[in-house]
Image (cartoon, rainbow, N blue to C red; front, top):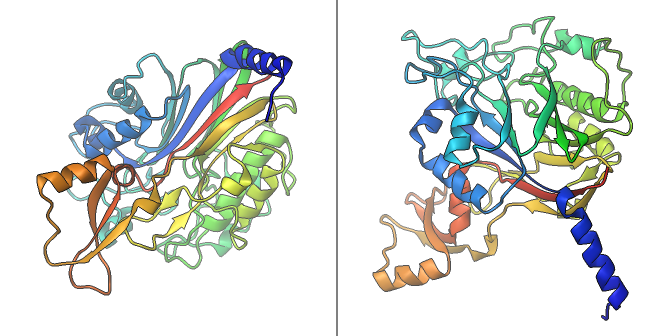
Length: 409
């Protein structure tokens, strides 16, 4: 296909003129990034650094980072509100501004008799001591942070808004906590928080909307509020961004964005928009009609994968980036490894061994050995996978999102 000289100059002019308005965004839910991991600079954090080094950004959204407080989760924690700063130093991002506030998550969690909090929520005792309303096994466990190259103009953090204030028709009496107790009448809408950070991009205000919703899952509680709370958190997002949702909203102290406002909204919204049963998914599908996704709808695959290296992993699309119509999408995607590289080796009592020449050949192909459990075998099973896959899995149970935008205010 031939391109005329005039067309070539036009393309070059557009690229040059929009160059200063180009914005690179990354969103990453890093699994349970607590104070101890950050202070120790553990392997999970090192793998995260490797991944982010391959995807430079002007804006970084982080989910599941603990807002640090002294002695939480245990006496090794010495700082307050410094975890994101510590992370910027580790990632060599000292020139970035930040937004970082404590989530409601875990605020009512109870420590052990020793005064220390549980770190692993996957035990009956930890779940018994967990916050029964906002979840989490220690205060501010699943907080949200953001780093950006731009100056901060203003910031609104919503964490006290009651669910009933937003949706007066919600019947809280039909729900129970995991322990079978009634929900408090003043339960907050957000189990974490909702943040609107106004940043200055080339003289224009842009609203950076940070939201990590409650999971649309029951976790064994048949009377959970999670599905409807997730729906109403997403309803609030839709109303805040566009001025309308499928219920009437009247909150005297909060106003939605102006119709001509520029925004970037992103986070783990904890429901797959393709799920026809989750009420929050219907809200997302409606919101998609009013905003721009960071990638074409056909490219939406999955951003979450269950732990381990099963041949048939549990996968969901839970993380999203939406932008106002003032942004032009250049590229975007989900950071996935090459899944086709996987080669099953079988299940054995002892792992396969490779000599130095074989190991060198695998390294050139960027293949690594992994092991996993299979119910059909009493021995561990082994496979060769893309090295990036192992790095991603050891960093989180979510895959990062990235997007390049051109801002046309």
